[in-house]
Image (cartoon, rainbow, N blue to C red):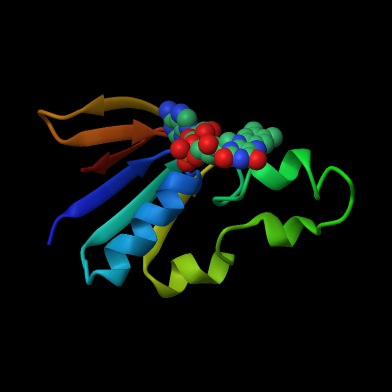
Length: 99
Ligand SMILES: Cc1cc2nc3c(=O)[nH]c(=O)nc-3n(C[C@H](O)[C@H](O)[C@H](O)COP(=O)(O)OP(=O)(O)OC[C@H]3O[C@@H](n4cnc5c(N)ncnc54)[C@H](O)[C@@H]3O)c2cc1C
């Protein structure tokens, strides 16, 4: 089935992994994010959230449970530092993940 490793846990990553599962991809999915937070919306940061009109939890694109339910591994808080497409691995947080 293969293993999809997404580098960067932003809005694009959240859409991609949801689409993969939605289209029936059953292989392993890992999302590597430099930030400690799961994918969240950025536009409200300079608008509703900044004005105190939005709770932090509403910034998240999906609840944390979604990723568990969909068997999507989030590796957060460490950037990917190396990608070797030939050897098919990516290194983040001292761990090596096969692509
Ligand atoms: C305050 C603010 C307000 C905005 N308002 C609007 C708006 O009103 N309308 C609009 O259209 N757009 C707005 N934008 C822009 C919009 O949010 C971006 O276009 C959108 O977030 C892009 O999503 P992305 O997933 O492509 O990239 P990003 O959101 O940039 O996500 C990329 C992620 O990858 C991570 N990353 C990078 N390198 C690595 C690495 N080596 N390893 C692991 N992780 C890595 C980064 O930490 C980041 O979390 C706003 C942005 C900000 C910051």
